[in-house]
Image 1 (cartoon, helix red, strand yellow):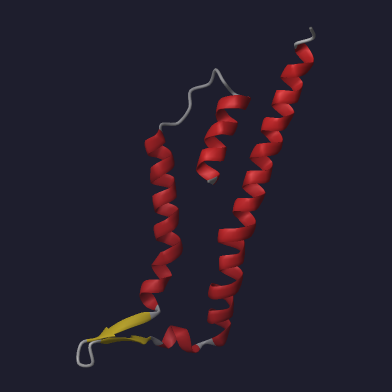
Image 2 (cartoon, one colour):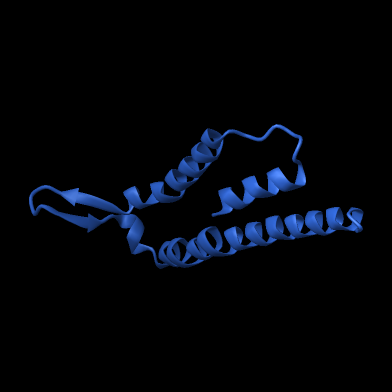
Length: 105
């Protein structure tokens, strides 16, 4: 959603500048998703004897659990995307409003 809004903002606010390709947006989203979820691979280990997953020592620290499951999720998947969307949409709104001032009928 943020990538689409960012691309739309780029297209409206800077229509004559060269825009990044869709691959660059896809690459950025993929890298961000992998980096944010990479820590989850360190939280569990596979026990082949019992054929089940167990938590590692990392998951025994309450501070880590609070920070990773609450605050990081809140900021990374909630607050930062919301701020980015608001920023892009405000820029788009201001640009459209500015261009409509020049078009007096």
